[in-house]
Amino acid sequence: MAQSQNNAPAKPEYEHLLDVRDLHVEFRMRAGVAKAINGVSFYLDEKETLAILGESGSGKSVTAQAIMGILDTPPGFVTGGQALFQGVDMLKMPMKARAAMRGPKISMIFQDALSALNPVFPVGWQIAEMFRVHRKINGSDAMKAAISLMEQVKIPGAKERFKAYPHQFSGGMRQRIMIAMAIALDPWILIADEPTTALDVTVQAQIMELLKELQDEHDMGLILITHDLGVVANVADRIAVMYAGRLVETADAAPVYVTPRHPYTRGLLESLPRLDTKRGETLPAIGGLPPSLLAMPAGCPFNPRCKYAVDKCKVGEAPPITVIDPRWSASCWRVNDPELAPAGGAA
Image 1 (tube, one colour):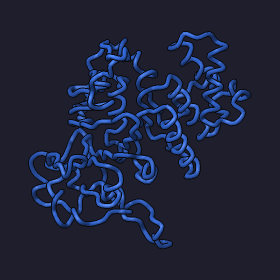
Image 2: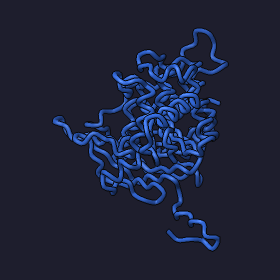
Image 3: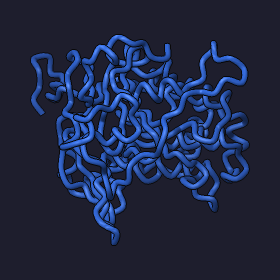
């Protein structure tokens, strides 16, 4: 590595900590080829929080799995694009080198902690294994490090619960165990896939607060994958909204919550409960269902469910990405239409 004049290592040259460019993923099945990810591009900077939002089936988790190199192949195949970590394309790395990055460089919290944890081993042993395998430290030191991590993620009585099994913890505590395992090797990037699924509102807030604290302490880049815009409202720096395997809107978080420029983003925001919602009042909902990836509609994939759709939205190809400003873009033919542009979303 090149040295600077003061003999300190020169900083590697890269624009973003993580830079995903034109990612394509498909699933090859007997029924046909499902194009799950279609040209997704986004970036993550150091110490930044990016929220990737969308309904189930929009491609959020598949995107994360492709980046991590843990996509089940077959049936899933990455067919194009780049995933640059500090300027190096992980998609072109040998599998052994890619595996070595998982943990020390980029780590992931999976959405179902009970399924992700091994039911036949104590949770402390599973955390300590990270240090035994990757850091090659002895069992006693690995145990101490695991207990320290359990304390860091605020598990009461960590030393006593080191030998407890996953089923002996509540959902919120199991999620904390998963977080401890994910941050064990001090990664540069942490991907949290639906980290608050099946947790009550109070525990959701605690988990999000914990993730923010750990991010600040470890200087991590954080990617939050969720379907709930309310969960990430106070922690996300930027938001990327996915629908049917495509990014439909990307922007800094604050303006999106005020004036969303894609009808799908607006629909997600309008469906959130608000403080001024009256008792018994029905929340607006996006009608219909997401399209089948085996039979995508012509034109914009969202057009069958979109109340703003016009004839142009229903023919040809999906609308291109329109740049609203250098940090805000959306994929909609009507992105600059006065009917959409000036209206406020859910504040």
